[in-house]
Length: 268
Image (cartoon, rainbow, N blue to C red; front, side):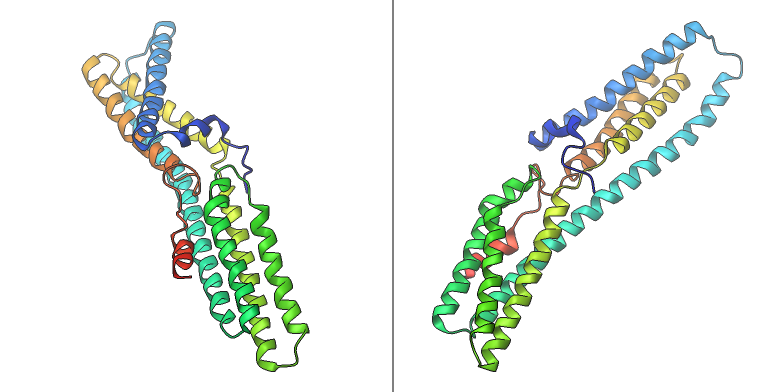
């Protein structure tokens, strides 16, 4: 899995409002288009086109846009999978916490208050602190310690009683705590997910090549050239915006919210 240090070239974009992120993505593709026009203009002066140059460019346009679309689709697919994994991890974590709260009702009053208190503190720590830390690729040690406390409590209950019902409740509590830990670990792993820089570079290079082809195709007609590159920048800029806004599931303004965990806290 990519580390949190990858993709630092785009880190500033995740602090921007959604509309400004969209503008930046469109401008990025627009700058690539202008660079492509400048390059092809220089090449035409150094190496004039022959009589069959336009036909070759006509053939290349569809040939270069197809692999560009495929590469973008692969990158987008990775992002949707990470987003799905993140949402599933949050839901599984909330379900495991709810199960632990439910099983605590079968414990004696003093133990029940201790367990529910640790679970409530865990939810508050995750929602209030760890969620923000995940945006920086970090985790809360306090939340980790609270889960360890639940494991210790369940082991002590199980070892300190001869009542079969209480032992089973403690065993279930330990199992649900393990489920919470597993879901939390998956959530933290997803929070480190990034589109690798090699993928970004590949996408940008292919967009640059496609812009070069468009520039050569409309080399003698300025108005069609401006319209083609303008629509090209808008369309693929919107695509990059969509990928970027969902690239990091727990970063920026499109993050996965801890709604399911917050609901448990309200019920408690």
